Length: 209
Image (cartoon, rainbow, N blue to C red; front, side, top):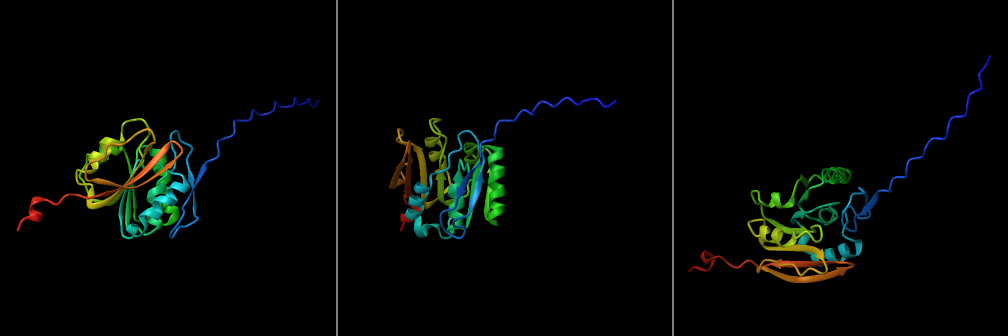
């Protein structure tokens, strides 16, 4: 005798995953390339419009630049710099999964001059310094990280005339070292980006006759 099979209850459908975002390279060698972005809390890539404005400001300063991308996240700024002629870039990102995705994105683009450091930005800046000609800082908002990281950069991490881009919440007027001169400023939503030019004073030995 054949038993009648009872119909199986329908499978419970799992909640759909949030679609991964995409990062678009705006200009340079990798222009229009799109890269995956993880859906992680607090991960907020610099908007395309702000990036385009910033890199128009930087112009020829990107050629051969050594770039430091602190609080790298998606690496949007450092990747854009490499696409536009920077010689090398170091990305510092605390979230291991985000750092792994950034490493994969570098490989996808065939970029060999990008180094990803997984760790805390302040701990990185407490290490042995190597001077960079261009630094990007986009710290998490409202955590008091901007000022101490700016101060730490002055311990040997910047060349004499380095450029520094700092993005903070608009309500914050960041305290920056006296050697930094504000060059340009752009606002987008609740964030403001400021580009500074470092003008280190000459050492006493330099002026000596």
